[in-house]
Length: 250
Image (cartoon, rainbow, N blue to C red; front, top):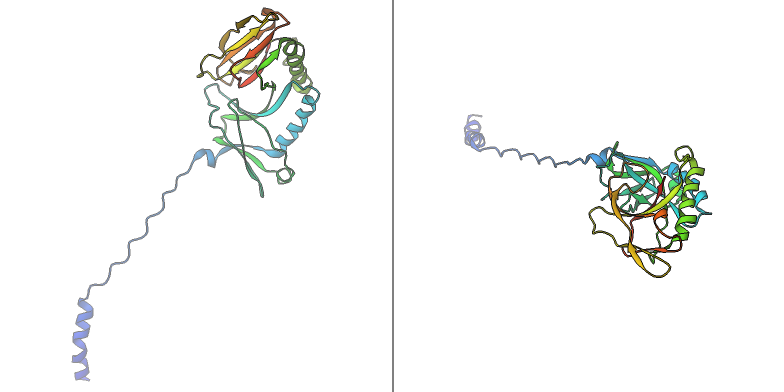
């Protein structure tokens, strides 16, 4: 017993004096960055937007010179429209919907997204933008607009569509007095001409103004074609393509 005890003493001392390995340092926690706009983004029901698109389609079907879009509209004039993106997200649906520089988008009509009641998610926080509808005059690829079409057709078609689809009281007593060709405020002065029946051309006046009748979208460069200022048999020639074409009411 005594021999065994003494023989084991060096081993006990060696184990006692051997430094124990330090525990491994814990892995650092990954840095998590939360983007408020993604976590608390503005959103809208795709099903509601789908029904609205079908509703407005009935008013543009017989008015070929106008169009209707879903529009992302800021609630204050200082909120930007550049960089807006819409994601259509459902159980089996995930699509990015392009948004133009006026906040307008063409809604894809998808049965699967409707059945899932997918959401339209904007890359902005809640409370700054809203989803709405927007009528405007169709842009022409050649940039040439007959004065008679703008007066008797496009402007009146847009005004009547607005009245019949729910804006009757807001437009009570209003008449269509002209058309506005809309451009970015930061762009060079647009070249928008009136060409009369003899071929003579004059520049339309360009002002800083609201593009449409509401006042939350900030200022744009607007070439104004006021019917009373020009002969009815001429044309408007946009050498710089407009972002949008709106109406001017008196």
